[in-house]
Structure formats: structure tokens, C-alpha cells
Image (tube, rainbow, N blue to C red):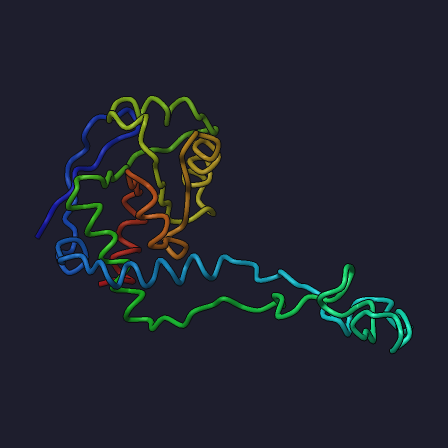
Length: 212
């Protein structure tokens, strides 16, 4: 069984933790990760773009000029698509871009993304990080101690109800290139976008319970 080092808030090592091979030691499935990533990006699209066709634009009730004798092509409305101020042909309408992904496929994609981060040595487990009050400087120093100041970081905490997790959230939320999520919010997009995954010991156990 693979292991990860566990670190304290001051950057010192605080033992190790065993992690499940069926999650972190699998061969990452790139095609599945791509499929789920595409779906996640599609789900974030608002799909609110809209245009008016010739029936929806105002005006155009009167025939612009008489049918014959002008030498011009006959016209029935100034709101035809080829006229200035006319309706739009085949324009976008509000719709959902959601793409159906099976649960097992999404689960495999998450496991593959986690395995990618683990096999590259980019997962950091943190324990004993309790603070009486939020303090961003503590986590900046933590990043310096582990030489990941310049990396894009994803923090995963277990539960915002706990004071230590909530103070962690308040401490890191305004650090540059840092995102913070709960285990049930983790996605392939954020795992691949972030260079370092910093996860609390409790959040790691919760994640393993769901994905194993």
C-alpha cells in the first residue's frame, strides 16, 4: 500500500498515512478524464445567449414600398433577416449544454486525476493545522516551507462546520492561485488545473471512503 507524508502547519513532517492503491496507484485513463473534463466545462456554460427572429423584433408591419414599378426587388417587411434592423436567422436560443456522464465514468476520471497528482508527487497531506483565528501568513509560510509558493494550489478540507477547517478556509481563500473545496465539490477540472493538491487528513479519508 502506498504512503504519503503528513505535515504540520509549520512545514515539519508528522509521520505518514497509508493510501488506497485502487485510487492512487491505478493507471490514469486519459480519455475518460478528457470526456469528464469536457462535460464539466460544458456544465459551467450559462447557455443564456438569445436572439430575436423576424417574428420577435418590433416593427415591420407596413410594406416598405409598393410591389411594382420601383425597379427594386419586392419586399414585404423591413424586419426580414436581410434588412437592417431585421430578425436573426438561426440565432442562439437559451439551452442547456449539460452532457450526461455515467457515475462510474465520472468516478474513474476522479481516481485517474488523483492518481496523476500522486504519481507526480504533487499531493500534500496536512494535519495539526488548528488556528485560534484566521491567519493567512501561516499558510504562506507553510507553502514556503514545502517549496510550493509559485504553484497553483488546491486545498481540500473536510467540513466547514469545524473551527479549524473554517479558519483554514478564511486563511487561504485570498492567496494568489489558490482554490479551496470540500471533498464533495472536487472535480477533474480543479485537480488538473492545480499543480499541488493540499488535503487535510480527514478530507483524504472522506475522499477514499467515497471513491474506493
